[in-house]
Length: 163
Image (cartoon, rainbow, N blue to C red):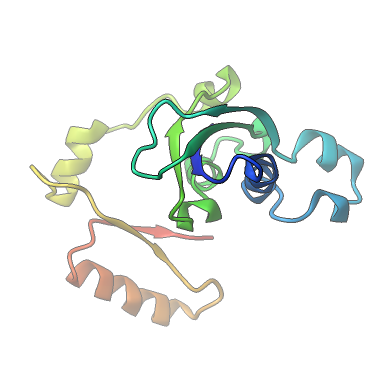
């Protein structure tokens, strides 16, 4: 995954490592006691380079992060979580490219309905699709159902279960 990050040059290496860990194990590597997780699950920084275009972020770097395919399995929601995750909340960072290994691509052969089918199902013809996550985890089903109704009444096209 390639993320475009706005950061001072002297801070980009530490910031890149923090992104790799946040997008994978969500904790400091030193806190992980399982060697297999340390070596096979924790995200790794593969490359850092000056971005050719800042994308509105100012001084920017392209940070290539390697994430373990095993953490995605064949779950499309988990893939989206691995791509965007908590770092998507950071205003100075954006996902700009994805290069998935063959093992992940094989698990995701494509949508059954395609974009046109999704637009038809949601009625989102000629405009952006909207999506939100359903939270908080652990809330009673009735509460989550009411929140889901509120989202759909407000015009949200897709409501994603967050966990």
